[in-house]
Figure 1 (spheres, one colour):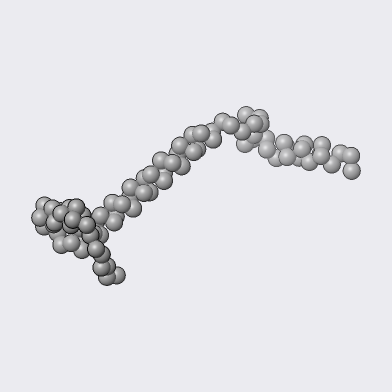
Figure 2 (tube, one colour):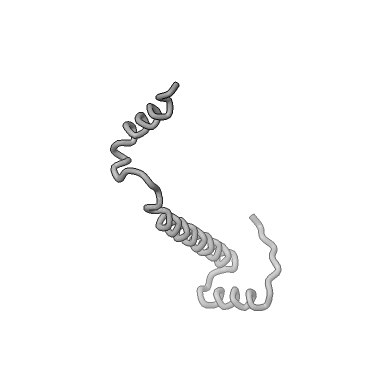
Length: 85
């Protein structure tokens, strides 16, 4: 993909600094920058997901052994619900 972009003076200086500091061509600097940006966004998303899981942990109601007795619990619930029918 070919990219044509207009950069402000600050961005242009940043690219020139990186080019001189690394010896890399602008194309490689842009590619590397994109990879870093994607990693940053993925990291942020993981952190938000972890925070959500932390906030949700323990808010449900039910028996503490639900993972072991869920079939029985569902059967009992259905039996109670349809006992009159």
